[in-house]
Image 1 (tube, one colour):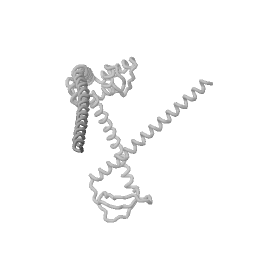
Image 2 (image 1 turned 180 degrees about the vertical axis):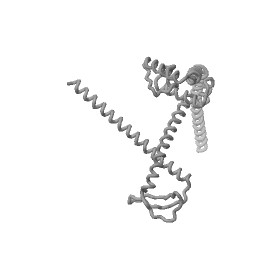
Image 3 (image 1 turned 90 degrees about the vertical axis):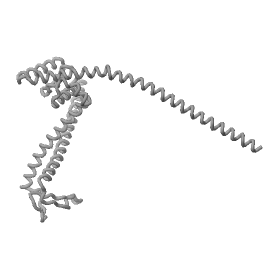
Image 4 (image 1 turned 60 degrees about the vertical axis):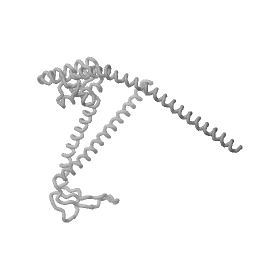
Length: 282
């Protein structure tokens, strides 16, 4: 009897295992079918995307690049070859026409930006972007006929604009460091006549020596190392580092000043609004 029960139990267990396997297989097949269905839909969308890129999108870009190339051609073949009076006349005419269309321009606007803004009748930000791209093409000596291929090679308009903005920021930082370098050198000359401090330390030679000082808890510094016979390269490197630090501080102070001025302006504008409302309400 016990042997029969054991055989029955074994059969039942086998059937249960097989049922579980079938259930797992069915679930796996269902999941695979689900994934396959979505992938098929994505394949259709991908094919549509390829068609869009090859037709409408590509045509839109081709048209935009061609227009910008024509702007570049006007700048290179017409504007640059004109006399100073011709250039002034063109800029004056463009400014007058743009203002007549209600488009804001200022005297500092570049000719390339005005050309782009006039042709595209676009907002200032967009015109500045096109102006950056055209300016980049000019700086790289790209001819109008090569402009569309060059834009594609550079990664598109947005990438060119990003690199131009980055380049301008780098130029601004360099100019700030150059200014700070002159200031640091002047301060060093003054400090030669009026030293910040005098330390009695023997054995130092050369035109310059470097002292490694460590701030202490008492508020002063402890000299923990020295280097004699400092060469010009190291001196210039230290001056450059001092200039960069000064430039960073100057820029930070200027930015803080702009923020304070803006906050004061906002507060004044708010106060004026309150006063005007009080007057209006009697």
